[in-house]
Amino acid sequence: MFLRVWRFAINNETQCRFYIRYYYSIYFKGQSLAGHNQRFSEIVNCFRPLFKDEADVVAIMHSVLTLLLDFANRVYNGDLADDDINRPHIYNVLYCAMESYFAEEVRKSTNLRRFV
Image (cartoon, rainbow, N blue to C red):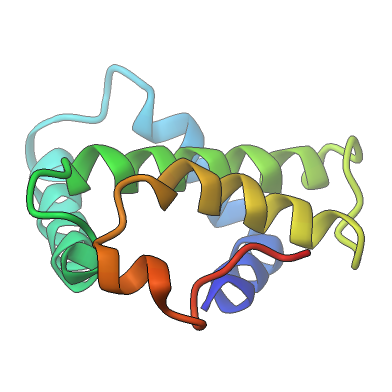
């Protein structure tokens, strides 16, 4: 799943840069904010089963999205290469940001692990 999301971010620079600029602007309110919250809540609900009951999944997913877009922005700016060395590093940063919040059965799963 990570590589699909990463590929989307890398292949959609204009949309991702717009999102970053607009999301943090004073214009992000009203209908825009309501629409964003609706779409974002759908994403959060898809991922909620992976996390402990007490985890703030909304905050976790916001952090993951912010980190992912920050890394993508570094690629856009030429500060970071999109290569086989950096992609596992980026995944590991995202994974470590979430790891302590995963439900126990998810932590034991072989599907979600750090790159080694």
